[in-house]
Image (cartoon, rainbow, N blue to C red; front, side, top):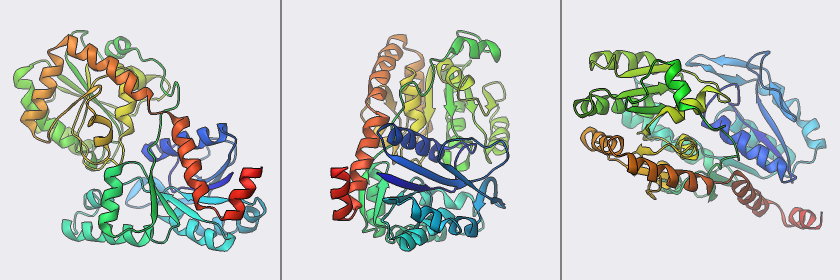
Length: 392
């Protein structure tokens, strides 16, 4: 099968969408499919990959980490893309890439599938604070309903997110297909080495949060929880790894809560070296986002044998709701702190959850998810194309 993907984000922009695209793309190619990706150009140092078309792009004023592809530069490729005889277009993001994907689908006579990665209803108001929250939520619902109903089909990473979209009035055919984990996606980490590098005592109780440091990740809640947990475990430390627009706000909040000696911001960590060490330094990985459509970082932590304490909201419900390798906590500072204290105070529980976590994460195979995606693609093709694929 020949697939044309379009996205408004990709590496070196680090986030869950970039990771999902790379994971699916690699797995599909390994299974013999052809996957061309169109994505923005960030700089001369951009990631180089086969069949990755970098498009000239300009910075997004409200978020300088992101880029907006030049529409004309993509549309100028129409005849080149036609000559490649793609079977299907897969759009990964709902901005310029969505508009271009729908436009190219019409020009080339191809079905258009899109992944719904981001829960905009619980996201948008953080970036449009001047707009009343109910207005931003209503706008997000209307925006999503309109876009999704333009498509031939949707790929959704969790059942909870699909249920939300159906509640919006999205009628497009849809399939729940989460992003899997590639074998060896993260090398075994050296938690002791991470602690030494950052002057953290071997025996100090350590919680870790890794991800984009953004308002919608609900890290504020984790800081308030930490202020409660500190009453029970006076030496507890929370490491926050990642970059993003909420970092300075969180620094100020930690200072107001008197947590200067209990929170360590370590910034962006290299995925090939420092990131696995950071995961493994933790006695537990903590997470409380309300907006995750899946929550890949939870699976990454589990794959390295790190127990998780997390709320079970939206996409994270599919991961931690099975209570394998994880303790589920309510979004209540006392309850969440209690679950952390329980885990940090019980070495045998940590060992049991660590073993469960590795086994559970191993069930989320990137190859299996890519197979499911290819099968879903095939259902969207015209009958003649399906016959040709079967015969080919």
